[in-house]
Image (cartoon, rainbow, N blue to C red; front, side, top):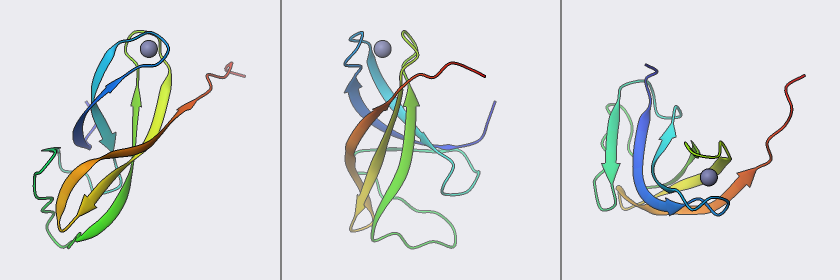
Length: 92
Ligand SMILES: [Zn+2]
């Protein structure tokens, strides 16, 4: 199992309607942590008062990939924005 951080934010896959929640990032180090909307984002050695963190998610049903930004304001996780789907590409 990989190590990553998770931001929990409700999202519905626009292609198949599956309910998705866990957005992952490896941008903040490698200790597993999980935040819900409103949680303070406390990471040793970092002060995140206002930040956007790259997060990603794949739909467990249809496999579509999504990229988005987790938004931190005043040190708290406030939501996920700018969700975009990434086209599936054939493996070379
Ligand atoms: Zn889907």
